[in-house]
Length: 486
Image (cartoon, rainbow, N blue to C red; front, side, top):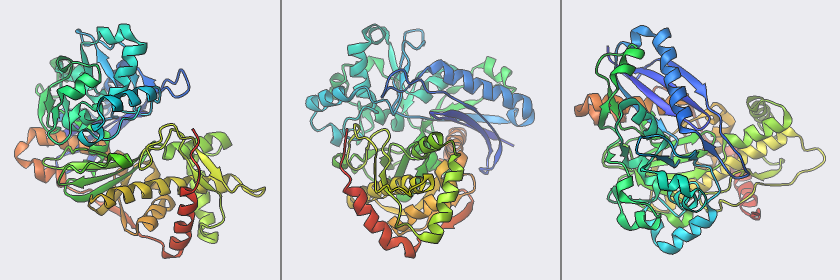
């Protein structure tokens, strides 16, 4: 029996799942990971923390599932995207990693757009402080010592893989978020690199996500009770891995991720940029495909914020909101735009603050919970409209992430989009499963297409609620009428 380990390097935690050759999860373990926010709008992490936590998880699995670990043939990684990991010539981090939701480089976005006015049509979208190139410009200005010490730019999952194999590399999907990759050709672009004040010599080799990117170092094989030779595949960004985890590898497949942030990832057969509506369009981790991504910056994070404010678990708020809307329908609650960390698709307003309208003396935390969940659904619907109107096919949709545990949340989205949404059996570890598929593909390259297209078993199918349709469309217009402040 062959086992494949999928590592999901998330913002708030790291998971590892051991998957067999048929795609069944045989074991998993995780560790939480803290985000450092030293100033308003800043979001950063220590790259060495990712490695320490990943190693600790494998240590745990080597003790609790010795037999499975002895059968591991390959490892791969899904990683939070866009983070700036600068390493010196000894592969040591020279600064904290600025994360995907860091907002400090707004001014540098304007600089980048002035330098390359058509950048949105060449890279994955318009400049945004979450993307990597603006971060580099900010670091050159504000952290010049660290910037000058840097010998290479890596992405978060690439640093963990480097610690596993000793080899520097990245993949096309993750590299797209640097804004230095020509997404149509999947090649580093010298003009874009120069605009970011960077150097081509300080960028890693690019490999397919399913390629053999090195072998696990022998000391780690011994430490984790693994065989003497373990292939480590290149891996990919988390949105791509989540899509692959549910088998979204063909044009028309779409994965709806309702996590800390939210993403509607739709597989396409060609590069179809849509920067005017802040859609991210990049090479997919599956061969010969692209991924169109509509982004919701604050999804479950918005409900978690209310949960913290009201000292009520988010799951309880969601359940009570579902009970209330089942009785009263969606028409009487406040209307919210829960953009706690700005708006990307379709308005590209990273400076936007959240908004709430229609509060009365009888409004309570359950009303606010519904309004937030509905507001996130509206943001997904806006992304869907932006993507489909540009020609991106969205035909088969699967929902994953913590928010997909709420049938109400998924049904709001299904009703707005007028489409069925499938909930897979293991959606909570879809990124791990996607990463494990890449590991399996690196070990069995002649079966890559079959492996990546394999679907998960269906747990349930959520269908639109026609009784909500008209009220949601009217409330969506009220949502669109909310003014932007920021």
